[in-house]
Image (cartoon, rainbow, N blue to C red):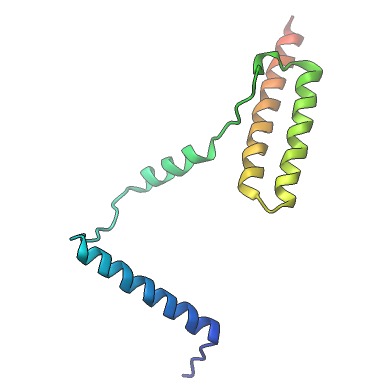
Length: 116
């Protein structure tokens, strides 16, 4: 069996070895014994789910209704597209989530107006 290693692969392997040696030396100097984390699947899912729910603080959110809310949503959509164009996908996703939250709130407001 022939295994080829490119220069970039060798460089990556060497860098990993260098970092590993440095970490082992640090652990030894500071009497640190590495221990694997022990979490249940539920804990892992819960911790990532919490990180998925992010809101952007908005000044005077209660005053954003009707056209003002629609304008604000359009501004956020532009901001989201700018983030995506700049390959800042996490920021784009955060803004997207806020847009969805505001649209849901808007639908709730519209539903209440229709009930009157």
